[in-house]
Structure formats: structure tokens, C-alpha cells
Amino acid sequence: MFDRSEEGHFGAVLMDMRMPVMDGLTATRKIRELDREDAKAIPIIALTANAFEEDVKSCLEAGMDAHMSKPVDIDQLMRLLGRLLAK
Image 1 (cartoon, helix red, strand yellow):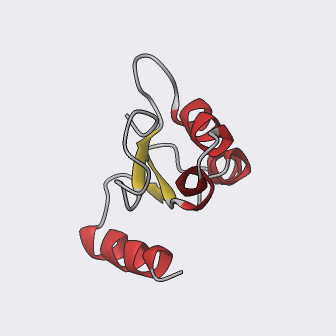
Image 2 (cartoon, rainbow, N blue to C red):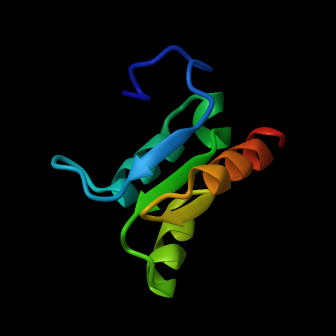
């Protein structure tokens, strides 16, 4: 969906880690590899039930900006988005 959008259309990506066609790590890498400016800068946040230290590390190594475990605390998500979008 990001690849097909107009550049700058999205402000952030909330990335599910377990999707039917492609996992979140692969999707993040593909976004970061796109030849468009917003692909390099858009905040990508993992939303996942996988909350072990190695899960967080894998997300960051794939190019995500942050990791949030489910169930998501909406106030925490809003603070995180505010911080990432302010950059």
C-alpha cells in the first residue's frame, strides 16, 4: 500500500508483524529499499504480541523506528507518534 501511494501521503506506518502475504520485517525492509525520499524517513512502528528482547532487536535491525507490544496502550502510542513525527 505504501509503495502504491503518492509520496508523502502517509505520516507513519503501524506495522503488523504477522500478515498473510509478507511479515512485518520483510515489509519494512522493502519500504526502506524503495527509491523515494519518504521511504527512508517515514516512522515505522511494530505492533506485535512478540515482546521478547530479540523481537525488539529484529524490528530495529529491519529498519523500524520503534516496537510496541500488544495490547497497545493508546496513550503510549500517541506519545510515541508525537515524538517520532516531531523529528
